[in-house]
Image (cartoon, rainbow, N blue to C red; front, side, top):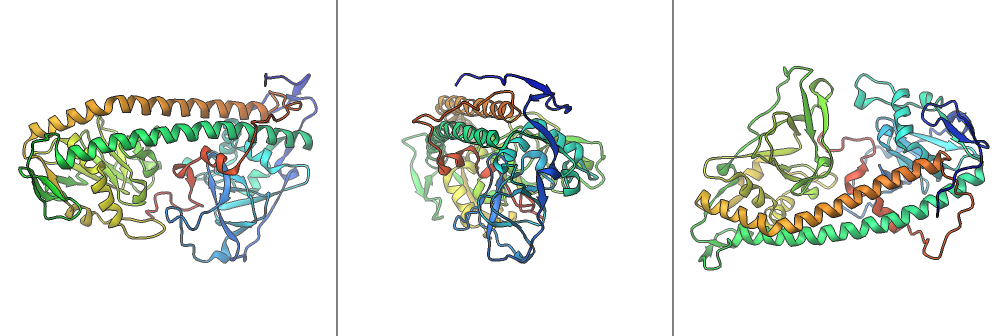
Length: 464
């Protein structure tokens, strides 16, 4: 539909939305929500929050998301329709309306809406960039990235109040737009997965069978390695690399600034998001691994994420979480070749098979270091294989980057659309759904992903 403005506006008195439709009000959250503090409901389902899509029921059958929760009687009840938010991460969008009665962590605040408030509307409003900046202003704490928004501050925050019928219409409109956007993102993700699978097949063959079709093979003596070229050398990984060669000490200057690589920053072979810059004084205690060009990092916690990244830049400001093992190649090892070996299917499968734990499967670095690895005996052959993989993979990489850029642009469009609609800059009162405007919950799930699941108030790397 064409964007339409409301007929008349008035000053809101709020710096983050200077003008609002004439028929809208501005009220403190205490006029819109009541504080719900109810515990002792251990039989209710567990809820989790996506930073993009809100609160949903945790899939306890999916082992990747399974979490053993002790003392469930201390967890808070969120009734269907309540807003639940993480005190420490509401500024990132860790909030949403509960779809059913369920349990959230004690680190959450539960706000029960009064009849004039549609919690789905406020779930959209509270996740806009402008509102999240206001959350930061009202939050308090010693360290900025651990500021907490307590109920006493939340209830003082001003929010917009459109007439209830308009709230309902806004929610209906945005859900339909979300469904269209989610289907677009899902299609692009499926394309990316296919391209990644194709690239991985190139890598797997090159680092396990060589690119020389005439190369003679011999049994490796290792079941999961199978046959390897007869001139390749097999040694434990720890004989090829230095493990965690550099670590930040406790006496590091508090003002030392760096870019932080945590588990959520990395997808297999690439960075998943822009790295956050922080100083040592404000950094998590797990920000300790020093990275240098040529290093490969692999997650040793939440190993199902397959977080592996090759550092292909000169940098003195990259620090990784202790949830990674840092592999620094030794003599006779081409760094980029090593990175392809670590990304290969046989190696990744070996890591996951040897990981221990249900909630946060992890592998000990000593176990990782014992894995047999077969490498060509000369740097020249390793470099030739690297050149082959890059040449074959270049068009695939370009297509992946294009699809990722399109997803990013669509997300930015969604953010702008939501902000404009929930603040009354676009009038959707006369919008009517069309035949294609179908909303299915399974479609909306594509707006988020495992990487943006907020871990219910616990450490997101599972390290502490």
